[in-house]
Image 1 (cartoon, rainbow, N blue to C red):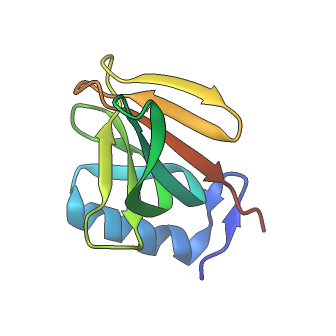
Image 2: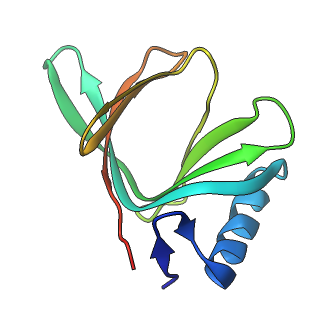
Length: 119
């Protein structure tokens, strides 16, 4: 398992993670930050409550050499389907520690509990 520090992955772990991300998006050029374990929830308007999805894993925040210039991906440990979001003006963020809430352009409200492992 790669070491995680306050600034994210270090050394070889960062290089391996960057290469894995670039297989999905060749325009990713730098990992900005990492949270070692997150779980994605969506807000169910009918039930008026947060519902856990099948997306859980490591969160990577990165820069890209093409537009949009920033994004994040949850590398899913539960299936082959990762969650990727471009960071644009249409993405609303709100930090309610320990949760990162966001609403994307599809108006999908999500909540991501972020647990950061610091070594």
